[in-house]
Length: 284
Image (cartoon, rainbow, N blue to C red):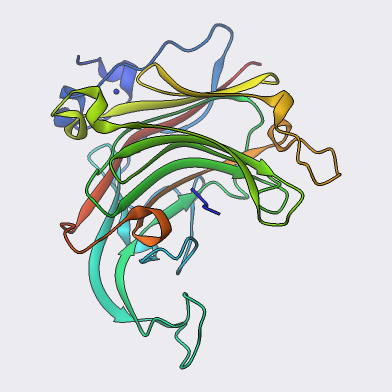
């Protein structure tokens, strides 16, 4: 993210809106020996559970066009809904004559939300799973990803379990190089058109990361998109640290425009990123 799922039973899927359950792809089976250690099923209407999520505020990264705020995320009818809106308001960080992209904008033109488990929950190894329906309009950039709980980016590691922009679903892994803020990337993508399903964007899909001491595997609806051996992910900065042997926390966000999202001039607003659940499984 930083540049730089045939109807199943409610018991199998968790609580979700009936319409949402009607169009879905099945989650792959949980690997033998793994147990559910954390989840948010989004089954209580209102604000996202503060025991699970914190919010980013303001302009965050990648010269993106949205201002992040908590107002754009709500739990309703068994779904977490992150809604991006076109709305104008004064930029409280504006500075006359500033050249930084965050402070040179006099007005906020778009708003959205970014939620994370930072400093609340983090994990080393396991299966990380999200069932969601994502927007695929031009200009939108939804993501389900993890970042190292410790260590400056990218030396703390980043795993993009799902991100979408410019017609493609991406699955990426990044770690540190010998240059500060410069990442080594293993990036794979698949165009939504390649699934040959005109209703793909109307369906809920299951994204998973299977992560152990040997490798990281990123999949959607059981189809592997990317695999990364951990023998190759040691930061090349002389510290000999492998960030993927250390805890990562989860981020869910809906970004707009910026360096990768694309042109927003023909994007219809509001647009929604809808999440049925997020789950983490580990071996005891």
